[in-house]
Length: 132
Image (cartoon, rainbow, N blue to C red; front, side):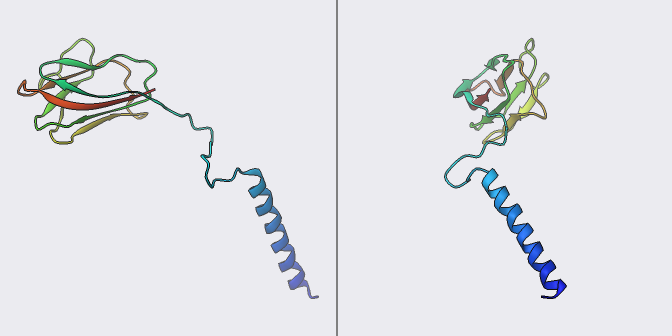
């Protein structure tokens, strides 16, 4: 054989050995969940809360890793991330009506209490999911 064929066959064999070794080392992903060392979070609470005037909707939790608050009503709701102050137009931020959501995640992790208040003090429904 000429040298080019020998080099080509050698490369194919080496790539094949690497592929087989990698396949044996890795778990089979079909029908299983692969764990790459990513911490798993579990839902601690998921509920619909009705708010009118200022209400605490999430308690302080140092174990919190993620939370999402969605406004499922036709009224604007204000949220406040300060345990000591009620939510209002002056002390908080707006959560739009009909699906406005606020997410607490690794980029803006907040473990304190969260307050909510409806703008016109009629009942507003918030879907709240808190993960630990």
